[in-house]
Structure formats: C-alpha cells, structure tokens
Amino acid sequence: MVKVRIPTPLRTLTGGKSEVEAPASDIQALIESLNGQFPGLKDRVCDDKGEIRRFVNIYLNEEDIRFLKGKHTPVKDGDEVSIVPAIAGGCEQGA
Amino acid sequence: MTKPALKGTDKIKGLVCRECGKEYPAVSLHVCDMCFGPLEVQYNYKTIKPRLTRKAIEAGPKSLWRYVDLLPIAGDPTVGLAAGFTPLVRAKNLGDELGLDKLYIKNDTVNHPTLSFKDRVVSVALTRARELGYDTVACASTGNLANSVAAHAAAAKMQCYVFIPHDLEASKVLGNLVYRPNVVEVEGNYDDVNRLCSEIAGEHKWAFVNVNIRPYYAEGSKTLAYEVVEQLGWDAPDHIVVPMASGSLLTKIWKGLNEFSKLGLIDRMATKVDGAQAEGCSPIAAAYKLGRDFFKPVKPATIAKSLAIGNPADGYYALKATAESGGAMDTVTDEEIIEGMTLLAQTEGIFAETAGGVTIGVLKKLVKQGLIKRTETTVALITGNGLKTQEAVMNAVGRPTRISPSLVDFQKTFGLGIHER
Image 1 (spheres, rainbow over the protein chains, first blue to last red):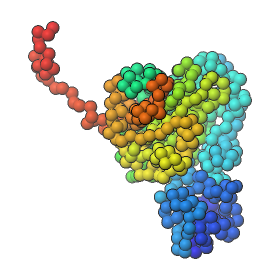
Image 2 (cartoon, rainbow over the protein chains, first blue to last red; image 1 turned 30 degrees about the horizontal axis):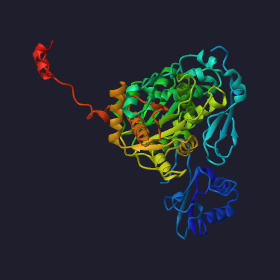
Image 3 (tube, helix red, strand yellow; image 1 turned 45 degrees about the vertical axis):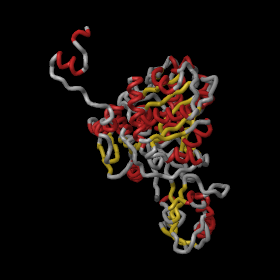
C-alpha cells in the first residue's frame, strides 16, 4: 500500500481524512485507485485529458514527480505520496 | 479625463481561471476552487474599445491612471493617485557601450512615492481593496512591495501588516518602519514568508495584495508596458528586457502589449520579451535553458534580494510569454550584477538597485550573443532604486578622497600644479 497525504481543499472528498492508503504500481494507477475510494478526486487532480493539472504538485517521497517520470512514475509499498496544490502567489510546497 | 470613467461591470466582467476557464465574480479570490489555477481579471473589451483612443489617453492624468479603462477597479481611483508615468530615458552612452543604437531605460527608480515599480501594483490593489470593503491591507514582500504597501496604507489611513524575510537590506526595513505599519520579520526566506501569508490570509479578513487581491494587484504592472509604448510615440519596441522574481511582471508586460495591439492603439507588435534572473535564484531562466515549461523550485542565494523568489508563482506563464514573443532569458552572477549597477550609474546617471544590475547584465549578454541586434529598439526595465540596496555596491564604488581644508593639499592630492591655471 502507498501512503497518500491529502491537502485541505480535497479533504471534503476523503471524509476529512488527511492521510489515506491505496494500492498502486504507478502514480496514474494510484490516482485511479484513489478515485475508486473517493469518487471525484481524479477530476480535481487531472484535467479532462487525464493529465495532472499544472497547479497540482505531486511528490513521491519529497521529490516532484515532474522530475521523475510524471504520471508514469512507479510506486511501491511503503512509498509516501503528497498531493500539494501550488497556490499562485502563495506556494504551498512539500519540497 | 474627457469622459466619465467606466463603472463596475461595464469594464470588469469578473474573474476567470487561467487554466480551466471557470468563471467567478470580481471578488477577493485568487485560486480556482476546481483546479487550483490562478484567477485573472476579465474585461469587457467591447465597451472599452470605442472610448480608448490615443487622444483620450493623452488627455488623462500624468500618472498610471491615464490607463484606468484597462485597470481592474470599478469606480474612480482613490489610492496612489500620483504613481507611474515615470521617465523613458534615451540611453545613448550605455547604448554606445553595449552596441545598441536605440536603447531606452524605463526609469521606475523614481516612481512615486517609494521609488519602485511596486507603487503601480499597490495603487491598483489598495484602490480595489477599498472597493471590496477592506480596512486592513497586508503583503508578503522581498522589500519594495512592503515599502509601497506601508506608504500607501499610511496615506489611505488603512491598517497595515507587512511580512518580510529576516535578512533584508537596512534601507528596505527602515523604509517600512517609518510609516508605522506592523512590520513582521519572518525567520525564513521569501518563499517561507509567502507560505505563511497564504495561511494567514485564510484566517483573517485582510486584503493581502499579493495573495487574495493578486488578480487585481498584478494588473497594475501592465502600465509599464503602456507607458513605454506611449512614450515611444505609440510604437512597440523590438525588445523589452524584464527582471523576473515571481515572473508576474514579465507576464503582464506581454499582456499589456497584446491589449494595446488588440485595441488598435499600436500598428505593429513584434516585441520580444526577454527575462533576466540572478544566477543564485534562476528557476525560470534555468527552465528556459533546458527547454522545459515547468521549473524546479530553488533555495535563493543572491545579492538581488528583490528577485529572490525560489518558487515563482507565475514562472510557467513567464516561460510561455517569452516563448510566444520569441524572446530569450539569461542569468548573471553577483559580480556581474554589481558591474551592471555601476555601468548604468556611470553611463546614464541612474542608480538602480540590484535587480537593475540583473537587467543590465542580462541585456549585455543578449547583445553579445546576437539575440538583440544593434538596430533594434530596446527597452530595459529598471524597477527599483539603488539607495535601497547600498550594501551590494558599498565595496565596489571606492571611497571619498579626504584632504585638509587647504588649497595646496587639494592640488597636491589631485596632481594639479598651481601654474596649471
């Protein structure tokens, strides 16, 4: 299972939980799996083409996945993933 | 003004998400609640266009408010009435030095009242904040913005909090304290200050000019582009070299030029917008060099503290604007920044802050690389005053020559013989 940290604006979808778990082999599969548990989450994180939105940052063990393999970045049991909206003018960054 | 100002929705349609296009009313919001994209002011260009002629603008006040029809306030301006309309200086000496026939300096070192381009954005932001019913204003700042917010808040009788990193230049700290705002020095860099301010903005009903008022605030930067065009005799230059911190200024320069073109105020628009950063904090220029449209946040280490934003909010849009315009980006070292500052001072008599040294240093590089050609009309934006960053050049400008109050001593010291007369 992969641990996922959920930002405040998305916690309405997770029943208020700030940390959840999901099984997955890569980031894309992780988002699908989260969307299965928490319907609507994918629409907030990805655009209508399925690409991760520009102002949503995803970190795998503190590294921005843009500098790894993007949505195809592999994940394994015990990894920690953070979803962090980059708020323009005020940037909440995990790194 | 010859005609009464456009009011309310005749001018501002609302806010729109730059990413997903979701629309919002023109309130104090800055992030799309759907996709987290930044919000931007949408204008009613159809009602603006017929009244916005060169003549009408020229008849306006000698301040940035001559462009009020393209600024996001609903009524008349109430704060910062004298900001903007700074000199555009023909820089012949510096041009000769660099190999440019038509170089101009847009001199915002003498903006009113706090000597930086931030007087533009703050005039707009505070006018809008008042319209939205706020009595307390605040900002996260690398110095110049705090100075301007503090000064304008004093004059507008608004409560004020400014948040700055703990290691700013002495003049920028003093330039807050004198206006008696609450000056909050945060143990951290600008990115830490900014993150804290986002949290505070969620808790208190204050107008944070560069957080929840940002869509309005940022529009004030367009006036630099408008003024350059008008001062060139209604012509857009071939190049504008712009210093980058968050990347917002460059983005808005590009927007301002395109608005003027769309509204038929200029006949040709082939301006290349070039971005300048300090090597010690160059996330945007680094992405440009790698051909990426995303950047890696950095920990700033540069004497150009006003540009020391490691996680630039508008970095993506600045990259896009430079690419669309066919411009370039480059960086300079701290040493080259000081060289740029002293070169500008010694050729044109303009004492710019460190950011100006970045702009001049990068301008020099772009000319050397052949990216800016000798015959091209080029404008360098000088956005802040050197008296605020004295520490940077203190060891590079020499010392006064001390003598006794004696004619002989004077002439001896300077090698001027008495018989020379």
